[in-house]
Structure formats: structure tokens, C-alpha cells
Amino acid sequence: MGKLALAVGLLAGLLLSGCGYNNIQSTDEQTKAGWSEVLNQYQRRADLIPNLVKTVQGYAAQEQTVLLGVTQARAKVGSIQATPELVNDPAAMAKFQAAQGELTSALSRLLVVTENYPQLKSDQNFRDLQAQLEGTENRITVARNRYIQAVQTYNLAIRSFPSNLTAMMFGYKTKANFGVENEAAISKPPAVDFSPPPASAPAAPPPPATTPPATAPAH
Image (tube, rainbow, N blue to C red; front, side, top):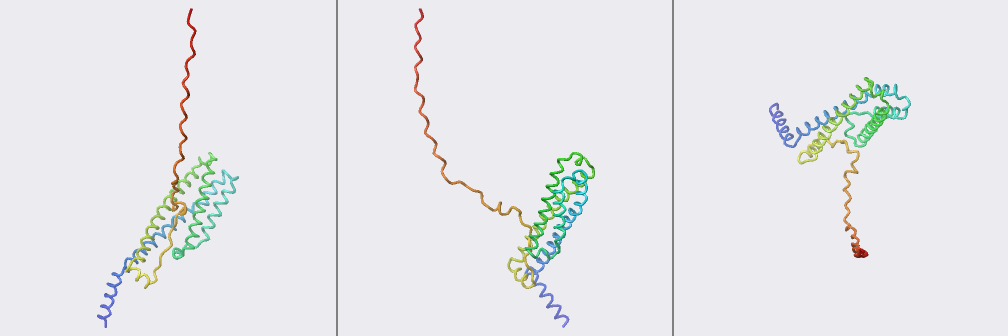
């Protein structure tokens, strides 16, 4: 029985491998790792915000609307439970992305306002925070792009035959992905005007030739 069970196990392993099981496992792990890195970078940004707001407030306390907008956007992001299961729920993923987008916009408005305060811009603490924020935004972009590619690879794997049969057998489903914020705009084809150009106006006739006035003969 032991040898028979081992043989059955080996056969099942070969069959599953041929049906894309190992590839599904690999791509699934890549999406999990990519999602974890995205969350790490977003959390890094959220951790910078309290000190950034406090520093700006010391020089630009009158900018309460902008400062409050950043604080509220950060609180909204924190209210969303960014669990690993979130990527399996398109609606939750869209809500998460929208909240992060609002925070990005609020931070952009804050940095625009700081341009009006030379003393704030010369503050070493503010410059350090601004540099950290810029670096974090770059890391967020890289992490998002890697996650997008990982999800595309995974989704393709579980939709392709015959691995799609294996995915159905083990309950693997497609994962939600980050969308393009202006997707509707960029997917719209450019407008092309096929109407004929307006007819050019006929050229005006040349002015009639004029004869120079006769000059009186000299005496």
C-alpha cells in the first residue's frame, strides 16, 4: 500500500504540474509579495504625514483647509483594512485605490501651498521630510508597477487552458488590479475631423493699372 500511495502521489504531482498547478502557485506567491510591498510603501508615506503636517503648520497655520484635507485623507486611508484578501474583492480594491488617490491629491495641494512660504522651504526638517516623501512616492510607483505586472501574469495563468481547469478545481480566481485613474480619457480615440476643408475664397482681381499723371513740359 505504501508503494501504491507513493506512485499515486507521484502521478498526481506529474498531472498537476502538467496542468499548470506549479505555475499558478508561483504566480500567486508573486502577487502576494508584490501586494505586501505596495502596502509597506503606502504605510511609509502615511507615517511621514503627521510630522509633515506639524512642520507646515508651524509656518503656515492659516492654511487650515489644506492641512485638514491631508489629515482627513490619511484617516480615510487608515480606516480601510488592507488585508491580503482585499485583492480578491474588486469593489474593496477600488475603494482602497480611491482613498490612496485622495491622499496623493491632498499632499500635492499641500506642497503647492508651501511654495508661498520661503521660511518653511528653508527649514531643514521640512526639506528632509519633503525628500523622504518624494522618495516614498517613487517607491510606491515602482511597487505598484511590479504588482500590476504580477497580477497580470497570475490572471493570465488561471485563464489559460489547461491551467484554467486546475484553477477551477482548487478555487483560484482572478485578482483585482490597480486601474488607470484617467482610463476613460485615454481609452477614448482622438477625434478626427473628416469634413473637407473650407473652400478658399476666390482671389481678388488685381487693381486696375493707373497711368502716372502727365508732367508739364519744362520751360
